[in-house]
Length: 321
Image (tube, rainbow, N blue to C red; front, side, top):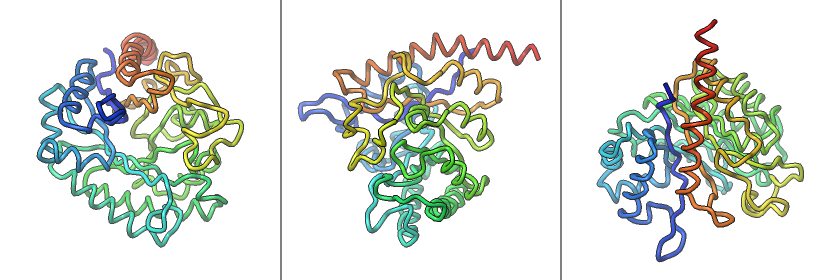
């Protein structure tokens, strides 16, 4: 049986009369977007915390938007993504004096989620950009860890796990830094969210990361890359994903011949007994003339054909033990 818990990360751009916009540009665009995802078979939906007010405005409330999802074949909103990519004097995860403000922000986001079916993941970007945070020392990582331990206790009270999604340009990016971070965080409160492309770009093997942190892994972003950062592009201000001089496009959909071994990861997921959501994410798919609709259809074909075969092979191995 093919994997049934596929969700989609709300990272989409569509053409409008006012130029490229997210689907939350207006209700008609959002409705069509949801129906495209439903037609492809996605049943979970992850979105950013800063879209919640827009969705509430269009659908009456965030639960009202979830009901629209459910009317179109989805199970629920599965994850909320919160981030502070650019450090400010008010919000900077590596600055302890800003932690109260960040915790307050997270509290407000949790209030917006009241009445939902059951969001599982409170996904966070643990740090701001590397160039704004460096030098990154053990003490820096400890300060960041203390913040997310606080948030993790808070979100568990609302039934959500705080789970950390790392960027190749973030302050915690190398395998050594990742291990230090997880050593400083409480496994009861802070979990791991595996973005296959971001780790690969940073020179970290996402499959080995999953093996080593399986007990703390609560989800994945399945997306590909064709580049490893060998030129310290992660230090490029203000946005390494768009302004690195050596690479014009970092991210690709599955099935485009990138560096991530998705069949091997799928087999590892099956062997591990993980039974949670797997999430497709596309980031800047429009670069080079592409489209999010096309990228998502290609990725779903890859899921239904290549990954389904890998899943079946791994399930047969497990059954034969």
